[in-house]
Length: 294
Picture: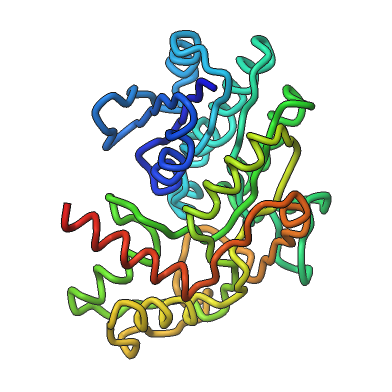
């Protein structure tokens, strides 16, 4: 299968590349920090995205690229919408017109956090520009590719990342630099190891499954608990983690405080269980140590 991976240089893109490349022909794209051979494309540039799709002619498009800085999205909503909604719509149009399949990665932020748990069929209620753009992207894939789309909602991604952009690796870098970190104590979610998410994506695709799936790690914790687990794994001073309420942090975008995605549908599909925080962080530490030694 010929696969186009949009966002190959991001942390999820890196995991997807490793998962798909042994068995499938994979062509990567990146906007910044691409690897040799990656095609340069900005998902928010619809004309360039169409041109790359025509050039590559993939059987499957994995849309791992996104504008994920929630506060920047709130301040630049039109840019956010171009990247997270209009770009995926272009991909979906191409897939529809050429009989292809597309995978779109979405977020727990599309819910408001007022329910104990959310399943795939629950109505969305996005609270910020980032979440609204993701909900719009989802809607485009459902409308244009009713029988050949895969939407995977996930949360709190962390994993091996040469760019060290995720919460876990940023915590490590800042604490090693002697900084203290303000962490929201009232934001809860399910940390998800990118390697597990990529494996589940491959599993669903190779079995021809479609529709919407929730896919997160099994633990449901607050950000402070996660930060302290990172300290424990990497041998860092947990006292430099300073808990704060969200309202004290002055964040530009409103956040849902407690979103738990029910992943029963994914489990019923036969996909492998995801790692909990402790095992995921141990694997992350080993992977990053290996990257440094190369």
